[in-house]
Image (cartoon, rainbow, N blue to C red; front, side):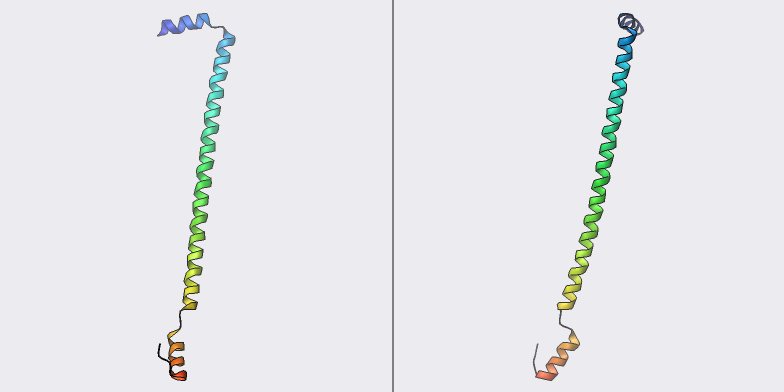
Length: 88
């Protein structure tokens, strides 16, 4: 392995080696950027999930409230029964 490296080193110029190093660094930067993008996407997804959860909770609460308002109150039923002799 050492020998192969030595031969390759002898064959390649310093400029070519520098270019290869620059390419490797560029690749590493691209990987880091991709990782950052993936993290940002994950964060956005988590935020959206949280928002959706909050929205679902709010709408559920609203539904419960309207259902409560629509349900006839027992005391009202009793009052109507007494007032108009209506049986529910």
